[in-house]
Amino acid sequence: MRACTHCGKCCSGSPCGMAERYGMPAAANRPCPALVRLGTRYLCGLVLNATGKQRAELICALRIGEGCHLWGGAASC
Image 1 (cartoon, one colour):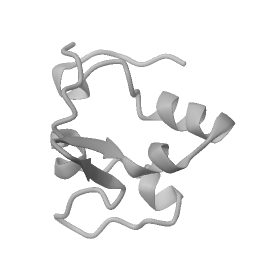
Image 2: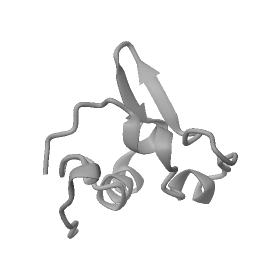
Image 3: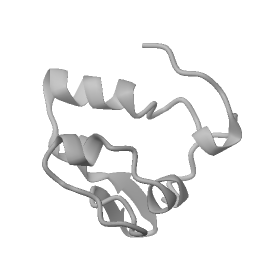
Image 4: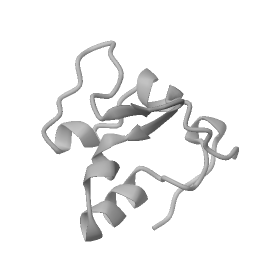
């Protein structure tokens, strides 16, 4: 698995469904509505705005820090 480069490719290609769960429905054939660009990096807006336990749960569910899921690997929290 490769390290995340914050390119946004994973979220621009197929929203994960977490945004919809948090009230941000995804439109067909569009990037995830939670995808946020900060300078040259893309980040999850759900995680940026969350705190405490909710933030930890999102990081686990989205596999943040485990590498790019486009390159394979399994998550465990």
